[in-house]
Figure 1 (cartoon, rainbow, N blue to C red):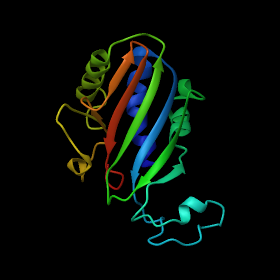
Figure 2: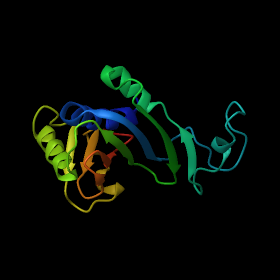
Figure 3: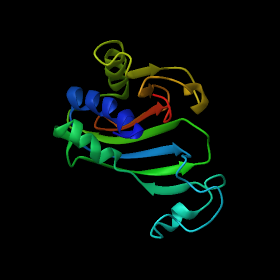
Amino acid sequence: ASCTTNCLAPVAKVLNEKFGIAEGLMTTVHATTATQLVVDGPSKGGKDWRAGRAASVNIIPSSTGAAKAVGLVLPSLKGKLTGMSFRVPTINVSVVDLTVKLEKGTTYAGICEAMKEASEGELKGILGYTKEEVVSQDFMHDTRTSIFDHKAGIGLNDHFHKIVSWYDNEWG
């Protein structure tokens, strides 16, 4: 699986097991990778014009199969998640922004409690948890595949929440 799938899957697993995911949209804000161009030029294959733009000076909308791939590792989520990517001009570390509609209502504090519990239990070493005011570079060389950011998420109501989780796309 991709680094983005590896970040999304633990978070989706916890949410789905504790509260049930009715549906969700995922966006990854993804650091530049070696496949991107340094200067404007023709895209590889000539079909994705945005991919031909200079990675060092642009935020580039792109596709990702990460959300759909989660349905392969967590079959109960098949068809419930989809997503997209923004490639940004940073060297390393990316973040998943997951907006979900939950089947069973809970507060954002309830979600945070479930993530903390999972990060200290069955997903220890895979799912991390932080309450610190972090930025991307704080996760350089972090071996965990997903670090839930307590302070970055928000809830609109008991069924609709935004979850944020970081990952080192070249390491974890």
